[in-house]
Image (tube, rainbow, N blue to C red; front, side, top):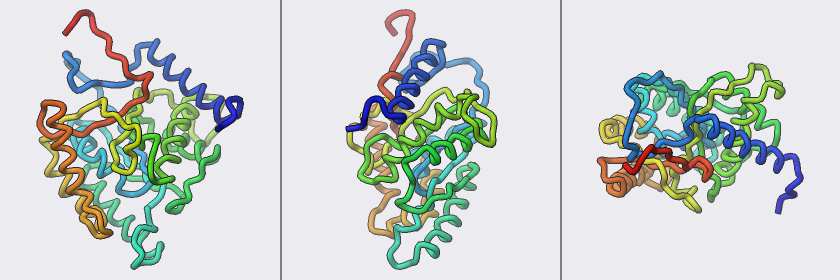
Length: 273
């Protein structure tokens, strides 16, 4: 059990405080699919999706990224690793080169920018240096919304990415934290994507109707060999079917679901809808 007075525990506490202050200031932290009203006009957003491996965010949140791009938002994918250890028939260098080509092709199809982290598959460090690197990436991109992994996972890289990104969002906002890029305090919300490896404790909260872009998403992510079943699991079929299930639950077409932090589950209304 972590020491409640450790630097990391303190940092997590500051993160909670930061979100609480954002809520008090009226900044949005979550938008439920069944919200009764919508603004008449909206400023373009910048959405940063941070995944442990190339392919993680495109499979779990790619349809939403395609939808937001069609609405005029800027979309950026950040892969902390290439996931180059996932094909025993190839060396990590060979498969990493393939995954990088595929990641660029998928990003192009989704209309997204793509960036790559400096770490190897299975080697994302759970330390302050990694948090500062991601914080600087956030400052460079200047996102309004961040998507990343849920906190619990079968895969250590996913769980580590969750912790690193959660802290990095706070660090990026603090002028006293020095990186190469000035502080950025414009992140409005952090959503956690639904991944079959990250199912423990995941409870869908936000449902986004992606019916109009699902074919585009399917064609885009199918450019990853592993997504088509090349490593033994038919990812595209799984997430396609999951979109049907989430759509039925949300009483909409086809949907992608996200979880948010418990303190972000606030819905303010003037009367019963």
